[in-house]
Image (cartoon, rainbow, N blue to C red; front, side):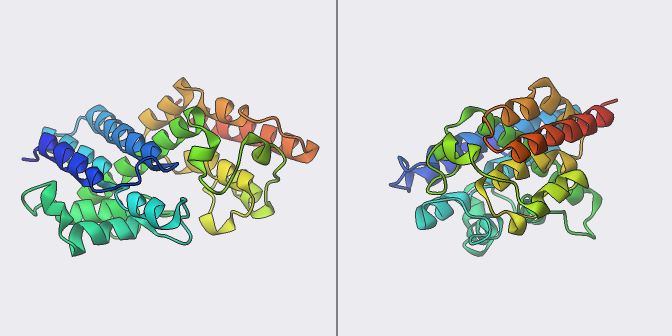
Length: 260
């Protein structure tokens, strides 16, 4: 059985090795990790999974972004194109054997490795067994749900360190054609299609098109995340303003259909 308290203590010791914890974005990722862990537990509980699988979902949540701390250390920003934090996290955990600090036995290693590898991809790889696929879906939803919370609560400069100065940069930004087409087609945004800073924001809004569980859609609706995130900025360009209203209608309608 997984010792979740041991895993939490090991994560705290892991963070203590970093001397740059005051750097913009670092604390954000610590808080994000614990929220994702809680989200994973909530989803697994709602699915009536066994205690073992609930603990496993929590551990995956705890470790899913472990590569982010190296990313912010090296790049001083978050850039998923230049730095594949999921793959790097897997390397840290399994090639460098860091996983044994968090969990004693190796019987869950393949599930953990695969779930972390898949958590930030555009889509989950094919051919997974049922249990591994389930945990891959849980961590993807748990992560996306907290991304909404982050975008609602955190300061813009912490969300986009070195990429954006303040909300004014977002308010004068435009939406790229490929990004807008993804929304209209009810698809997630490919990170390689993001060009403008507003593309990054719209990319988060589009996460709803890849949620896996009704509970996840209900959380988005109950927290009014879509409306709050869209209304966080006063879009200066008239075309952009109209596009954002269309995005609001498309996504809210999509959510309502999912929770009926």
